[in-house]
Length: 287
Image (cartoon, rainbow, N blue to C red; front, side, top):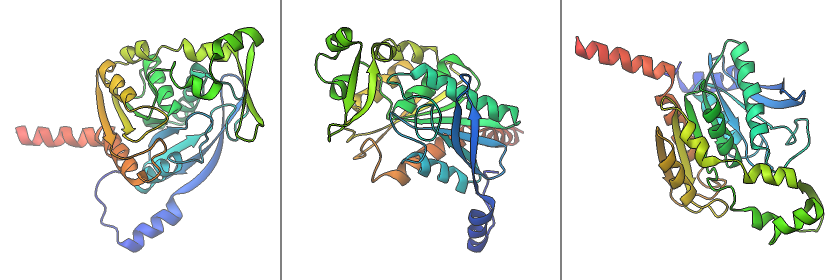
């Protein structure tokens, strides 16, 4: 599936046009909400799952580009909207990390029920935190990619909610967050704020089992989540690889191809197919 092909350029174009199908799918989570996703279907047994970040969706970069890159390598990829985001049902909630882990669990169980193997879970920004939290709770996916996740969840709140947010939310029970035009976009409740503040990233990282390979990628020019957060993940995850992309911002605006190549190489090097091939080569060399 992942080996070298003898196809001509015309064959490759035909494969891209005919064999890669974009299938809109609906998967129900454990809260009876419908999660909407797009499957880049290549017919592979393995599938990778791509998770978006805070107030984002499946149709933003880098989610689309990552899924497309795997599909061109004949590895199916699924990108979906967490509940309350994009096309999925539910209300948007600030925090909500463990609820999003539950959404990811529902997606993985769906593919397992379809007799397909989840080769990797990949998350961007808040989605990076979600895939790591998933790995700390469930030992069924052994390749995890954290792209620009935030290690210290206490940071970044003031920039969105303003100064003295704790005092104000204690007083009123909620904070309205408005856009630049002054229009209210969403409400942050005290419960949802505490969900973020009490989500223990460090403890979760230390619970990720040794047999789970983790790659953290971060841009050196990220102004939303500092590069130092990636260094912290490296300190607390036992089987961890860190890759810094020089000059990349939080969205990897000018580094999409480099990002996709790094993620693809990592996942392929840890796939069941590649590990089986390496084992056979090792066996032959020892004979």
